[in-house]
Every structure is written in structure tokens, then in C-alpha cells.
Image (cartoon, rainbow, N blue to C red; front, top):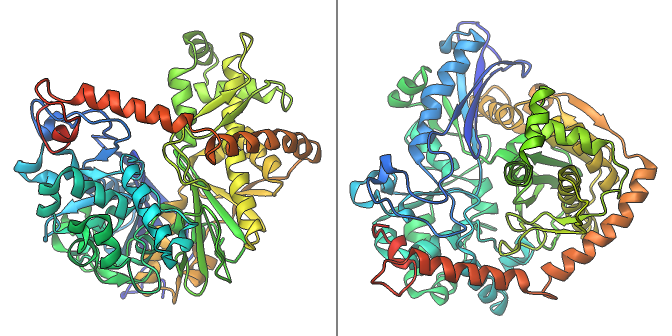
Length: 583
């Protein structure tokens, strides 16, 4: 039913937690129409250099490189601010809302006490970096990930192939092992190691339920089990009971209700107490039903600061370098595949902030354009290959297909004649080459890619979308909704509230119709094929062990940073700082 008990129109709310902000969207149950939305920017954003003084006090600990933390109360504030604002914009009666669902970046981990209180909210841990949320792009656990991968290969662990042969430093086990080894006191004090996707649901309904999506893709949960205690003990004897004491919990199916809105959460949001709260989920995976792309072969790319690629398949295949394949990981009855690129929009943003001279910013302002729009306009006039550049899109490491966050960005071909718009276009193309590499990996492993659908903020760049169509050789359609993940969450909320039998059925009715469509231009496809061969050569040269310069540079950087962070009377590196010493 799409009406309330008293016959009124019913609505659901989807809340999308991104890297820098959370967005709430009000959606009508009977047709998926989006009626209102609101955004709340996280006050503490992403913490990469020093813990915030308002949380950790004077002399807050400084962070080494590759760290990315967040403050969990910022997530609660999204519920307090964005949800009521979205209701106000929609002009609906809150009592007509029948369900709420959330999605989150992943793998984003929160260390908490038994009642869900984050460790950083305890005074004794406020200045301990390991007590804070580890955001998905926290890559400082690479050493732990390397050990997990080596041991899994040595022991021929069957689950490793479900993850393309490599476990990422972004995921639950690597980050948990880092916590144990760098701050054992915080590890001992932690009762649960919780995905933020599940923590925010816990805050809403009072129940801690692990969602099947992050458990499968990020938590090495396959065929009903996690890695064995024997495996974990071989990594570190104190890690033996990690699953049983810190991680394991009830697994909730996607689209089910995890519980019902508590009085406290009702007060935060202005919603009725007792409405359905859906099991948590990941931003990329909820977007597939929002795009009506839940059938096999429909590849959905959610393009923002990073890109996540998700797709359903009818058969289980081993795809090298994938983030994972999970039974029912997107919708029930199909195998859900996931791949991704750790940096996309982040790379473009980094370049405009650090690589574009002031006169370009001034020229953009005079034309009333943003710097991205201005550079895109300049780059649009170029013929393919005119800039003479090839870039590798690894400024935030490589998630797929190399699964190596020690890799770094490269631009080859620069001369004294190279202009900012040349580099900008080369970076746009590099991310498309990265996606082409993923598409090829799927196809070469027997997982057909039939359609390419794009969601996320970057779909507004028409040049970028055409480049992706030309480089992949696939017709590209964009999702008609500007709020893909939030709409996808709203679809799950409707299912959790009993308004539809399952997510696939709700997707048919509530999903968004396509927006713009981009068709590959044959001449462009041929021109990019030549450049892609050059990209692939560089990709394999630097990424597959032929030249280890990137890894050596990381080691040098880490050694120097450790020395800079250590107190004057300490020669042991940064471990003391990480465990909570004053910087």
C-alpha cells in the first residue's frame, strides 16, 4: 500500500552520507517523485592533518600521511538538520512518513562501546586518533593489508578469490589490525568495530544489525562465515578473536527493517516514533535500484570524489582486482559485483586547487564560470591526443584492478608548452581509462557489461560523459535524479515499511528514468584506442611490479614523516603520537 492507515499519501526519506556532507530526500511512495531535499555539511569535514581542537583539546595529536578520519557526531547532525529541512521544503506532514533508510560511504569504520558510544566521545580517548572514525579513504593500513594478502595466498584461502585476489587497505580487517597494533589500549576498550552504515541505523532504531552489503564486500563475510581464528592468529595472536569479540553480529538483509525509530531519533528528525528503519547500505549499491539498473549486465558508476562500479550477474565468476562479489549484495537472487576507483572528482579538485594559476581563476570569474566549467570549456576545443599527455589516475591509489593504495599519480608528456587545460583533460581521460580497465576485467572474466549508467555529481560534465562513452565504447546514460543514492535509500525505506515486496519491485515503480544519453563517436573511439594502449602500458609498468619507484617513494616519505612526528626525546617514530601523545 502507498497510503497511510488513515488513507493519506505516504512518503519515505532517504539519507545519503557522502564524504563531506549528508543529504536527505523526501520521496513519494506511489511513484518515487522527489518532493524536497536538504544538505548538511559535516562541521569537521575530513581530518587528515591534526585532530580537531574542539574535540581533542589543546595539543591535539597530529596525523601521519594516508590518514583520513571523521567525527561521528557530524553524522547525527545530518539527522538533526537535513531531515527536518527536507521535510520543510517538501511541505509534507511528517506524520505521513512511513520509513527512513540511510546509505554510507564504505568502508568507513567506527570503534564503539557496547551501547554504541564512539570511543572518541570518551574523554580519555578524545586525543587518540584511533578512537575516531576511519573514513573509506584512510589508506594507512596498507602494511596490514599486505600481510593479510600474503598470508591468504600462502594458505590458499578460498575467500580471497571472491575479492579479485586482494584485500584492500580500506577494508574492515586491515583497519582493525592497524588499530590493534598501533593503539592496543583503544582496541581493548572497543566493544564493536562497526561500519558507519550500521552505526547510523543503530542511532536511529537502537538495534545493531550488520548489513549484508558491507559485511560481504568489506568484511570478508562469504557463504555465512568470516576468516577463521587460525588465520587471524597467524596475523597477530591478539587478533585471533577479532571476529567473535569485535565484529560478528546479526546480518540483516537489504530492504528489511532493522528496527523502528526511537523516541530520541524522532526528536532529532521530527519524524513519528516507531516508523520503519531499513537495514543499512552503501551509497553505490543503493543507487542501482534508483537508476532502474538491477538486471544482469547493467554497470552503474557512481561518480563523485571517487567512483564505485556495481553490477549484477547471474553467475559467480572470479574477476581479478574486483572489490568483491556477494550473493544478493545489491538485490536478492543475483550476484552483486563491485569495483572502484579511489580518486576521480578528488583528483580534479586537487588539480584546480594546486595546479591552476590565479589568472585562470580570474578569467573564469569574469565569465561567471566555476574553474571546472572554465577548464572544461577550454579542453572541449581540443582534438583527441592534441595535448600530448597520458596520466595515471592513482593520486589516491588504485582500488581496481590493482588494489594498491601505495601507487601514485603520473602525468607523462609535459613540456614547457603544456597548459592547465591540457593536464585537466588528461586527468579526465585518465579516470575514463581506469573505468575501461575495469570493464575489460569484467568482460575478460566472463561477466558481460551490456549497459553503462552514470550517477553522482560528475554526470553534469558533458565533456567527461562523452569521453567515458568514447573510451569504453559503450552507450552511456545518466540517471535522471540528481539524488541517486538518497533516492535508492528511499526505495529501501519503502520496502522496509512493507509498501513493496522487494527492492526490484520497488525499483520498477520508484526508480528514476534516464537523463542524458551519450553515444560513442566511432572516430573518437578509434583515436582513444591508441591512447588507451599507452595508458595500459604505463598502468602495467608502474602497477604490476616492473618498476617499484612509487612504493619506494612511499617508504621514504613515511620514514621522513615518522621522524617529523616523533617527540624530540623519542626515536621510535610515530607510534607514540598515534597512541595519543601530545603533538
